[in-house]
Length: 340
Length: 292
Image (cartoon, rainbow over all chains, first blue to last red; front, side, top):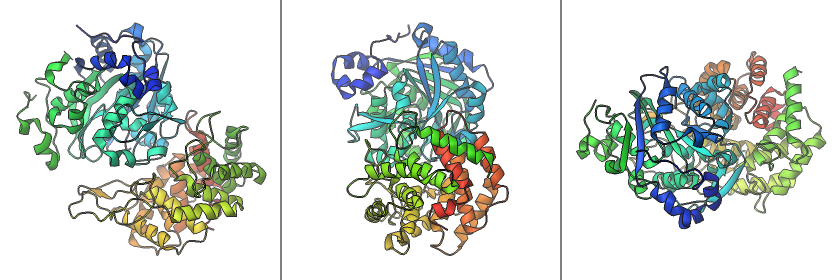
């Protein structure tokens, strides 16, 4: 059976308003226990021209995200647009993927759907939209876009505080959203091994406060920052663009990797751990997932209820940089699933 | 005067409303970056009464801190990277001498983290060169260093040791294939990609500081290819001005700017975009930046 999310149990805005106090208070128990067993939905999607809408609707149903619950929500979609390049479209979440997700939320009755990003390398958001191809989709689908690097910002208590930053500045658009949805690309990452739903949330922190790149967070430790940001932002859903991912020297300079998959879930460590398994990476060896396990959610297979496709047969190991091969490869750790 | 400039200036002034400065959202607290850039854009285009802009200059002076720095907004005193933009804005208004001097003093005493890297360090650039960071206590990057150089040169510090070292940093961060990005050249042995905006800013900052070396030639070749296809206001602005500082303004530039204005998205950060377009489109752009 699927785990129903209880509307109103602990809303994002209440959580953020309470910040760290919420973690220590009565709401924490429910919030924490929701993260002990997690459903992760995996579906095949042959290309960006496939019927992604039907797949996403199936994912909502499998994850217990009922139309009643989605209805009337203000949804913020956070794609990964870290750096634009017309010659390397596999760097970014595909624009057609973003459109399909936006359409799915609109069909489900969302009150408002916005796309938002605070990309980490290039200050000029309009250039990012042009070169990523997202601008055309925004125009075509009449989707609003918010530049998170340049928005009114508010400091909120850091819910975990691993980085030593007592507060994190969040853009108003993030604070105003009922649902924050991470739309990462399935990619390797040269500093942390893999960049998926959790790392993608670096891009909700505003560049005007943290810079381009966001060096105060990198200096404090990328893994610690990933946990602090996820605990503080309290996102509700991840939908991973695994149709074409990136292997090798990700997140920017790697090669395209055709996977033909969409991965969805409400628990981010579980989603990322599942993606790692599909990529031939042992999630228990990825440091940020080690740190997230038990704090923000499960990463062990027996705590993740697999929905949709079975993982076996879908695994296609991603090429890893040499310094990661021995560290996190599932083959090297003996944790390899059957490869497809 | 092109019609779009008139329209852009009117819209930009209207976006400020009755507030003392510009924000990212209507009715919200003014921020220093859009306010300083609006002054530069309107002054560069010669499209606003001096008294109108002076009000925002005074607001910037009002949020200047005791050490001379200017933060993001009155309620957000750090980071202080907008200090360089404030100097340029005040300078374009032709006043605020005391504020400019104090802000320049702050910049001269403020530096990014720097260190001798080990031989096996994964980054290609020289991490020991001192420049300017986005946030205190962190490493120096290309854009804040370029902005600081422009501001300090404007204030007569072109031969100061910090400016010479900052110039060295920018040259060190040039990509071997031409141009600049945010400030990384190679990582784990892979050369990264150039970006037009930082390339333009770097060329502006180097103007008058260095001979036309191979790195500059390669950057100009890169921009000559990229410029005709850029319609994003910020990138077009800095790429055009940087290119013009070393060669000449391309004949088609006026058309590119008009196109960029016509295709601006309604929900973009229009104050920033209009400011950049006006700065690039105005006949007094380089003087507004102190590069006449």
